[in-house]
Image 1 (cartoon, rainbow, N blue to C red):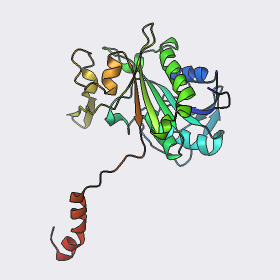
Image 2 (image 1 turned 60 degrees about the vertical axis):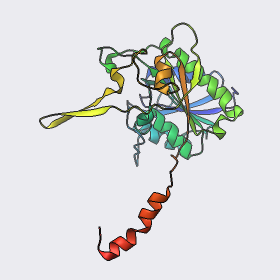
Image 3 (image 1 turned 135 degrees about the horizontal axis):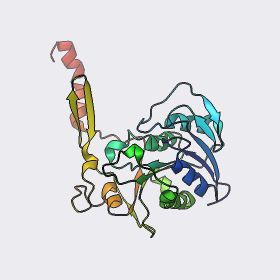
Length: 268
């Protein structure tokens, strides 16, 4: 990684999180890193954007009182030197499957960068959970070491190798370290989706059932998916594009062609 490489680093857990510090320290060894990150936790906010945000200068960098998308726009357009690469993370908790791509603040930061034509990497750490509430689980700096190492590896090599000529951003999910470096598998996002809801009077509780069964022996996700790779102890790297592609089919064209005729004739 060249010392001349400019990296904009952001996240959605907030500028004071352990994960962003781990990536900052690793990337700063061989690159110029500018941190523009939310002032507080903005997890699962997607690409929500503000019209105006307050910015504070902290020890690590700029703290934006807004979303990860705000941070990328502010960082690229105003606060920092225009970077060669945007890195988002390291997120506490995995970002796996198609259904999280528009929900995750970490991934949304990478997507926002893609619209600026800046390559991006989104990195998340898979943290298995039991009965302990996720917010109460403490992840140490050492547990982010594998994630920091693999992110630095791709930051150093992916640009020169031409990876971003074929992908707008990489979604990297890393298992907790177990003493030995984990292998990398190139994956595609799992299509698994198991959301439901339960009403109790005036309240509706939403449940994400995808995480209910994460046992490697019974995991329903197919081979080659991000979820299976991580659960089985491999680093998942999904090369993704933005904006999303369209599927233009003649059936839709025929329906569109009949619109004016239907409206003018009074039919429905």
